[in-house]
Length: 76
Image 1 (tube, rainbow, N blue to C red):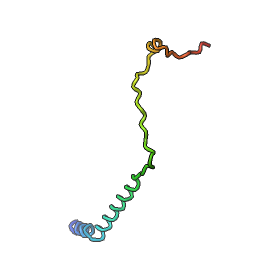
Image 2 (image 1 turned 135 degrees about the horizontal axis):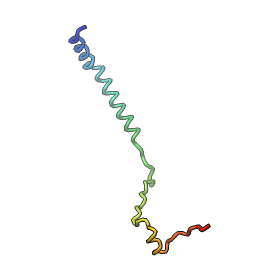
Image 3 (image 1 turned 90 degrees about the horizontal axis):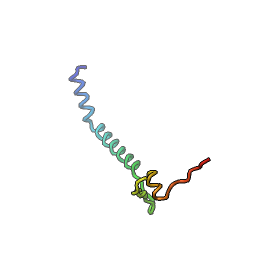
Image 4 (image 1 turned 135 degrees about the vertical axis):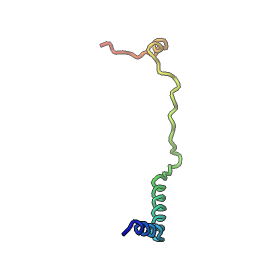
């Protein structure tokens, strides 16, 4: 079998009606399966709540003394 005959056979197989139909059916099936996998319906009233960002900067030891928010340390 020569290369030209091999390419002719390959062209006939790829362009056959059965191969085209099966390829389209498999593509549609995979699209449907991936859609069902991604689809998530949230129950009514249960939305994700965002946590508010902390606007104040963390206190340094210098500002903690001034504010009176110093933590009690064990002196044992």
